[in-house]
Length: 337
Image (tube, rainbow, N blue to C red; front, side, top):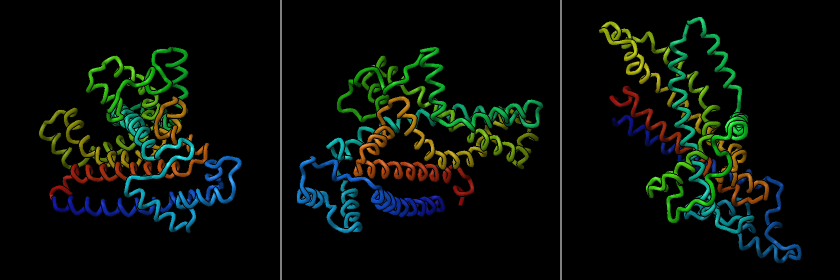
């Protein structure tokens, strides 16, 4: 247990150092963008004196290093500046856009697990069978389809040809939830608004499924490989010699240990899943971080771009830290050390 605590403390230091370095990369790389953010904030009749006064007000009159220090001190205070296009605090805009994206990512991850675990088990059972090549062909075919293409396919099939699910927005109309957490499914569930909850959940199904279908094939492949690798392990052979049914050997003994490398893969791939929400949110007109980032880039909104990029990096780091912690707890060699 002491070993687990030491590893997690070391991981936390690594996460903090990485977050600091990423904040520097986000800040200085965006300064290279050839966009006149000040020009968008000033009227056409503004003079050079007006521009200089605005630079002083925004702290953009000093060196790049001084600007970074001012920006970083604001980050620690929860102040990411004001959006040039929306004329609102960036922190408030992120607080509104982040919960929908997290809901979408969590539902898609849950769907991916519901697809990947049975899929990995089925492919393992088909190992060295006559139809194994067909299963491998289907898996490779699924691997080649990106999430945005899945989104278009699902819209055409379930939104146009067979209109059974909604595919635009977060729910019909404006969510009637005041003072909630921003997580619409949770807020509506707590308030007992079941019809509105189903409406919001049904709007999540297609975009979440598009992300899950793009995320699942690689997890299926790794899980199948891990199961094949553990099939001839000593503890598995001992369980079989003791007369344990094969289904119990597979589900209790083999799957538990094969889940460790799969869990690591999920942590690594979550960044791609989270990044995939950008295009998916645009395709499905979903009001999340992805749509906010697109609007910020279109309008050269530098403070908002910085805020979205920083939040994205921190979310990926946080998920990987949690996955590493879960791996340390599940790994018996680390637990017993």
